[in-house]
Amino acid sequence: MPADPLHRTAKPQRRASSAQPAGPAAADVEVRRSARRRRTVSAYREGDRTVVLIPARMSEAEERRWVSVMLEKLAAQERRRRMGDGELAARAERLSEQYLGGEARPSVVRWVTNQNTRWGSCTPAEGSIRLSHRLQGMPEYVVDYVLLHELAHLLVPGHGPGFWELLRAYPRTERARGYLEGVVAAARLPQPGGADGGAEDSDTAGDAPAAGG
Image (cartoon, rainbow, N blue to C red; front, side, top):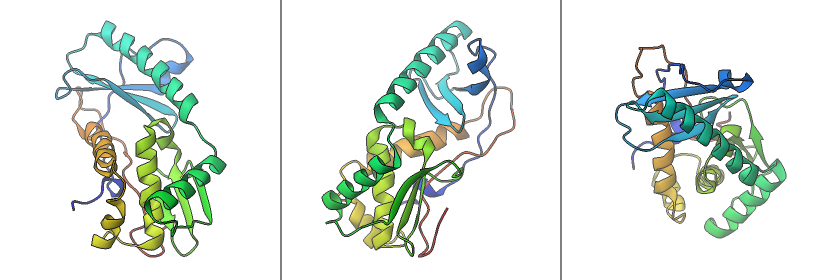
């Protein structure tokens, strides 16, 4: 099994777009163009910033239109999907019962805003699980995968065969891993202008018995 995307840090090259929407929110949007991206447009939250990924061939007018569309789409997704710590803990309990026989019983499950190099982390000795708030704008199956990943670490600290055997029960494991790998890969693509890169998040912690984040 290849290294998990939750445990890698990418340093992407970035370029601020000259076609960002006008108004107070303009400084919070970063457009990244990719020559490899042909038709699809995607967006995600990066701290207080929204990153929009578009094909390099798009005109500035198309860029402005798609930025507006993706901002509206993200906002709608977050209204539907945003959950508090209590709901996150209930979700963890359900996932543990469904895929881990109820054996993973965390003492604390919560969102955090200080994880800039991982999607989630686990401290088995304390039974605590923390998920990055950046996941809140991503599909539910991705959030469930990261949460289940951390729950599995309460039972198996490392990433050996026993750990991945636990995650095989979740039918969207590979799809979720691919989604996270895509986010990291898109951030690594060279951007026009050669701007210096910044830190990009990766994966989950918890590979060591007392790992935390």
